[in-house]
Length: 469
Image 1: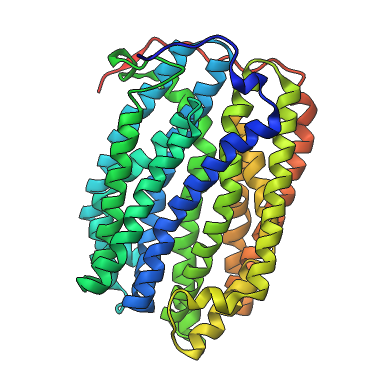
Image 2: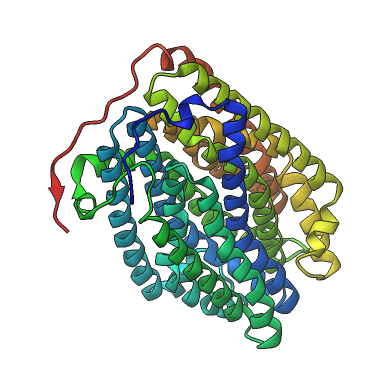
């Protein structure tokens, strides 16, 4: 039986260090597993198909990121909304937020499934597919797009399940899908000889099992009662959820725009270099996905503490909010400093995991690792600070931070440095954006810090208006 709990919650009583580990570790595992979906495909496609197959997955990635942007926006927004209202001892409003998130997520995922299936070929061309890469991209993309509703369930629902005080359940759901994918990938690619189609099928089957698990979890909430009355969209609640998750949305959408521009510039400047377009496209794609795997550890810590931040800010326990913030920022930065060492010292070993190609391919891939990831240790500043603002109900500074790296710094840097240094300039644009956006994040938190803890937590309007479906 579900129950509405308004008694003392461990989020406001447990020691911060223990609580952070309890929530952050499952979140880290969940996001690492999610990144492994892409990584596993890259490894097995690289071994079984070659770098053209890997380039194809890089072309499809922007479409996946668009859908992920919707899922993360609604999932993170609903999680923050839920935590803030539970902190204020308002479980009914928290349940309305979860129900609205479910309805919005399903509607959005079906819309994009139809849209991308219809316009897949022109989208592949838009996102940088060359004539050689296009057949692989279409074969891979047709199947991946069919799994988008399942993907949305996995990404979005896991956030509110974690906010419900069940971080291990959130982790378990992601683990089920990843293990399935890892088992099926080599069978479909090497045994059945299905190539990129097999990799896509393995991913979608894993997402299906992931979705089934999370749907079951949605009927067993510990802190709220979820019923039919919570699912019709209520205008103000939907607006609050979208507002709280907007920074995550813009961050993902910005990444999509960046990849589209970057892929096209790689094709242009790569063709002018000794490496060629396809090598440039594949090598930087692998670099970015490897970086995504490591940064997902830092992102896991940041998103894992979101319920702790939101609940305690909502209940006015500011000392706990401060301790949680600083602990996560220091931890995430330390992890990325270690990652920097690995990227600089062992790039050849990492690249060889994805398949042995030509000497030119290896040369450019090593250059990608050593240049593009040079200031990766500044990335956690933006992540942690953005999630912090999002968790306490302040979407505007969170949005500014989310947009700073991709839109404000990275895109202009790619055009400027690309025009000056050609394909190498695209690599130097990455660390320039990481450094500058990290500085902006730290400046913003310094400017807002005192004000955050001297004002009352924001109270969302209790909306009764229902938007008919």
